[in-house]
Image (tube, rainbow, N blue to C red; front, side, top):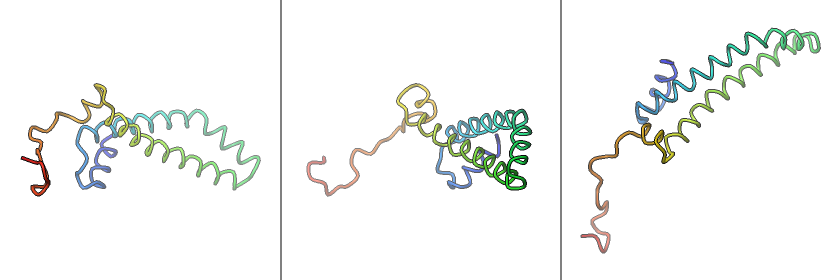
Length: 115
């Protein structure tokens, strides 16, 4: 989980809040753990069948499929976390954290109608 918290932190140069990073890390770690547990059950049979049907190419295709599965989990965890953080419900409020204390009333002093 720590790897999946630190990696996005380094890639985004610290622009993402810690709460979102921890949520992304937790979802990614849980997904990868479940994928690995499922792989221990199903992968030997899939590999054996692919090798019997396609020879060495079957092993290559199985390996590539496994890597696609890992990448889908990694990208999917980031997408799910973003969707949760943007949600207006309680989970979104927790992930976004407290509202900023000071919000500027105007950004451009030359805008007509501003006080």
